[in-house]
Length: 497
Image (cartoon, rainbow, N blue to C red; front, side, top):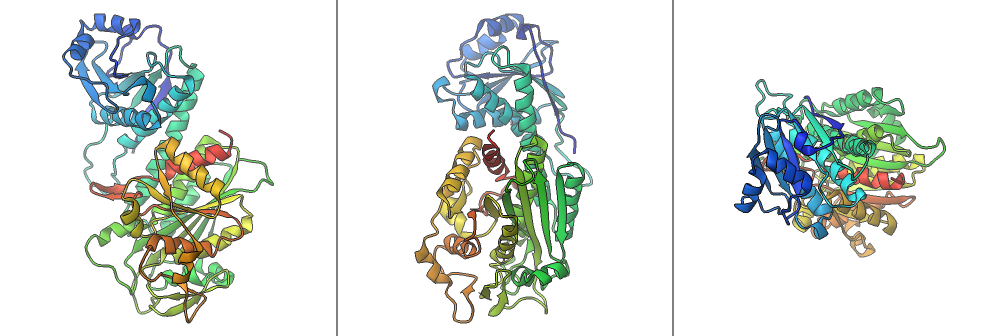
């Protein structure tokens, strides 16, 4: 699917511009600068009349499209709210409104003019970056299994002018960064939206290899079931026993830092379809279980964005991919398996399978002696009860790592909320027949799932993101690409950017 390109432009006067759609972000004081007054005069008072009539309030995320003339065919006004309250939240609202409006319009080219926004340079840089991300997000349309795709965007090119507020080079850098994040988000969405008969564990491995071929500092290795058996990954392998699709452990190594620098690690749950296994799920909405690899797809999307940004750090991405199906070979409730760590697990519910693949992946990633590890998983419905679809749950054994993720989520407006993993919850995992059982006793389901994972992460700093409520939507149905923005922002922070 084609995506619009971004160009930084220098324009002497916006009144002399020529474009199919001129985008003007405005604060709610609705004042026209000298430049906008000149533009208004050229457009025979179109701007001032619309403002006088009250058709546009300037509230965050509002928009109004006006007819222009032959050279400036349309003018899109976008609200930024109050100058003093133009924080990350209102920047995101303005950027989202710009993205949706230009993607839904008929114009093939747009000119975004930020020269009259009275904001500091850093804030403008962030806004331009967010606009590029949101335009790509809005232009994404799933087409792969459609014979006649609909609602394809017309937008092919976006020009951005910041006036004298920041240099053209900095505008270009902001656009490149925003496009890299948007590209990672859309890659994640595409993998999530694919049906499970296409997006299998083997398909994820192929996509990882294709990604590595595009980036010289990115390499991929794939462990098959034979290799995983040799390593003792009995927990991960137990999940795929009932499927004809072989499980895969996909390892991506991005080397942007010094050779001996410890990497930051991302570990993703990649259940490409989850029937629940023998503990079969209800039939209603089971089709949405193709999204149960949202953690895996976000690892791939984040690594893609990191490589496109050329971040000066080392990153390891591990994807534990399997399909959870019922069959005569499937793992049964009451079975006991041995994890790579040597700890034994009594499987009381085969539908609590994400933690079973993650625990072996978390043990495996320890061989890289990582600085920090973040796992991402659509792990529990309980997190939706706790946090809804607005925030992911953040669990961590290190306060600094938790705060880094919370701050990254706030800056990117891809937010999370910290949850407890207190020792008091661990007793719910006690088992008579193994070192632990894979589910708790019925309360605090997202917490006990995180407590289970914590038993495999004691050797390093670790955080767990439960994204069951944020990685996809039921209406309109589709993958969101979260938490790629948070993860990229976190890694940029660790890279000193």
